[in-house]
Length: 66
Image (tube, rainbow, N blue to C red; front, side, top):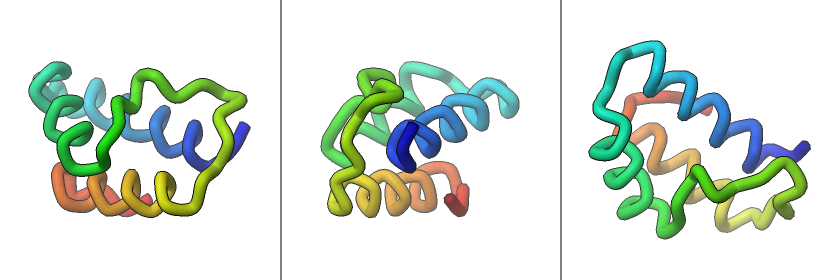
């Protein structure tokens, strides 16, 4: 399990814990980072650019520091 998967799980947990609109929030994240976080699996390769874009999107959309 890599950072990309770990971050996607943390983001999804944050969305659920804060009762955010799942579709709207995931859509905003996808627009910011360039991919759909629910498609990230535990064996996903940690590409540095994807990890960085996901962290930036989480901070921008959710105010979440990963």
